[in-house]
Image (tube, rainbow, N blue to C red):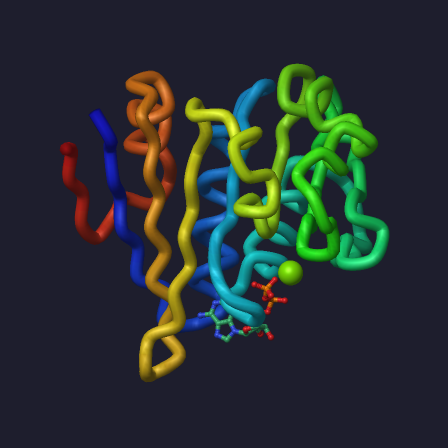
Length: 162
Ligand SMILES: Nc1ncnc2c1ncn2[C@@H]1O[C@H](COP(=O)(O)OP(=O)(O)O)[C@@H](O)[C@H]1O
Ligand SMILES: [Mg+2]
């Protein structure tokens, strides 16, 4: 099964609120894969998510560093931006295997991982609609993750299961 939840975020503030609500449900081992074109809002989403779970004041985009890590009390957050990697194998130099098991991962441009992207992830797709509203679609194949999503502070505007 694939569970799908759709959220409408007309203002940036709505995207921030959604990211924070989802962050509160997150657990060690979660991999949040953020799909969407340049400027869609992957970094905006990530920043709010990270700030909800850590005391970080600065959350720079990992565009050049590829990875930024944050202390989140009992775990670590690994924020990746894979836009600049040239082959999927480069992820092994970024400690991604350990990160995916022992921390909470946020991955921008996860398509760059090719076949190494695990199945058991939280897939987020951000689309820009004509009026600048962000349509944010969350998909997961994991029942436990679905239950957590439905217990988040924000309910989806639409949901389905295939
Ligand atoms: N509803 C919205 N949700 C998120 N970002 C928005 C929204 N409306 C406008 N924006 C703007 O879109 C841009 C998203 O940039 P960014 O998060 O860096 O994109 P990405 O990381 O996907 O390339 C920001 O400048 C932000 O202010
Ligand atoms: Mg970005």
